[in-house]
Image 1 (cartoon, rainbow, N blue to C red):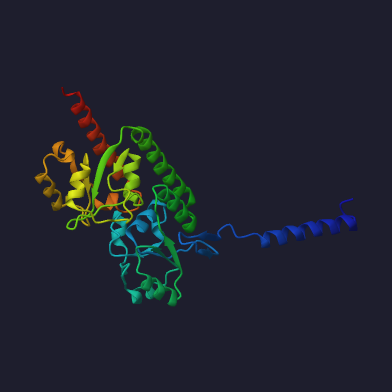
Image 2 (image 1 turned 180 degrees about the vertical axis):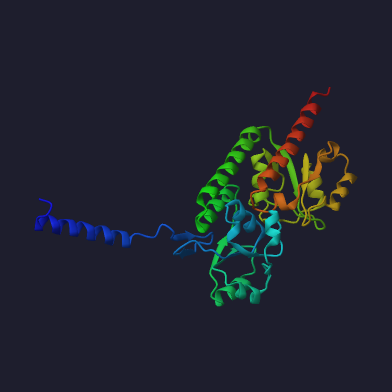
Length: 308
């Protein structure tokens, strides 16, 4: 019978086990994550007061549906428009530590390779918790959005945003990556003339489009190259970006070399640095632009091959 002493003890035992199991299980709101430097961070619930120390981090947070968790950002965080309304705490090399303390953040998200290590050390000394971000590939961008979604408790929106970016990358790769390769020179600064090697995120954009980085094999991430080496490589496309978001004036210098393939076919162009050089969601907009530019070089080459 259910009211027998033996059955009653069994019910009590089962109930006790259930209570203990529930107490031992982690809270559904608990957050335990590993950052891009291998450090682990844990919160009993998603941090509500977060500071971003890099523009791409700010963009990724908004893409993850976590923009409302940001209470401040670095001075260069200018996208999306809502980011411009955030209080400023200096930049990754000169933080306003007094303002930072006054804001009482639960967490600071910093760019691992783009934040002065001395600034990070000061934050540690002040007892501020830090999560390090370091997107190095195109796939790292949707992955980071998902990570930030878990961090802020906005997983559903983050997962949807990440899925859209992956689908967009797959569509570009399907359309362009297997087409005939095109020699591309990426000019990020001049003078001196600087470019990127195959370890740079911009190279991944070129690869997605079937572009071949003429200086991809160099050993430095952003090497300096000579004018003569660019002329010898005879790129079919020259794509520039600069620290600003206007056409770099240094592109005009290539018109002195009319026999360069890129000059001959009017394929000396630029993509805004905020799109192609910032490891955020808009890099896929840059990829779409780059793929169209590179495909124009294929058309030009095809026309040239048909000439008698």
